[in-house]
Image (cartoon, rainbow, N blue to C red; front, side, top):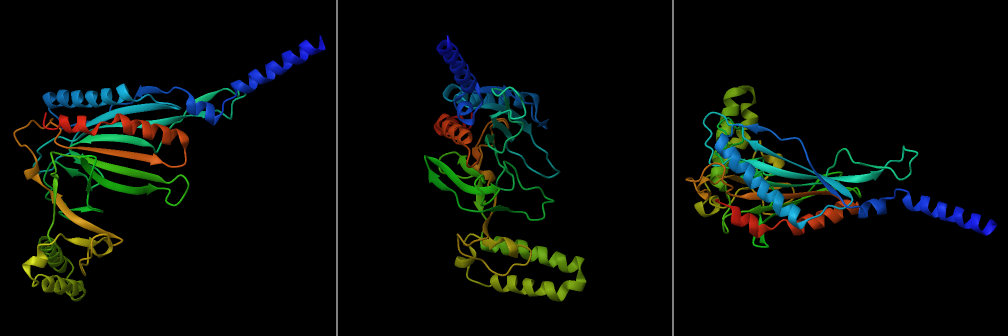
Length: 328
């Protein structure tokens, strides 16, 4: 009898322990999909919105067919529309689809040791966006707004061709230097080998700075002597040979307001000045047509669930399929 009771108690303990919530058991737990709140819809025609939603539905199907979440709930949502300003010329609408990786977490506050819940927020997500590069100061399929002070956009590094598309690079965007630092990996899918932006030449950049500095002298005459130092520097640069002035403008972030010199590609703290290239687009297409896609993977390091799902989603995102959707 004692042996039977002892065996029974042992089995009870083992069973209870097996049911306890652990990070490892949750990591293997089948995940779920959950549609999130609808994103904004603004300045989109009814006909274009129908087409744009169909594009996003195709992307969602591509991913759900080839990827099954584990250890998390994947919330997903989409947004459509733009905020135009007077004088801005738009060729295509921006719209996006985003997946949020919400981990299953053990509920340490519950007396039920098997209880878990879905995380409330996450810094790990994947976005697929049509006709806008958010990481490039919002490069739209449009001219830069006339009231934009800078009149150009800042590109941190030149894209390089990988896997038949453009790799826009990676960047730490949060918790720098910690085990859980957050990184973005960015891809750009375009027609053939073309890009929806062009590199501003040194001459064009200098003329932009010249105009800005001259305006500054008019608005703040008390600083004329100080501002003139930089204006004179710009004018001296403009006397250089055309072969030199035609090179791409690579500039320092901290010298943007007060230009001193151009630097070499890869210099720490530098950027390429770029502008939207409207010649890239097929202008007879409706604004709903995707003319390029960006794919951005944003992941917090140091977590197995994030890593598992990041790798699985990468396999499900088919760059060739996305490329074949362009211009349709």
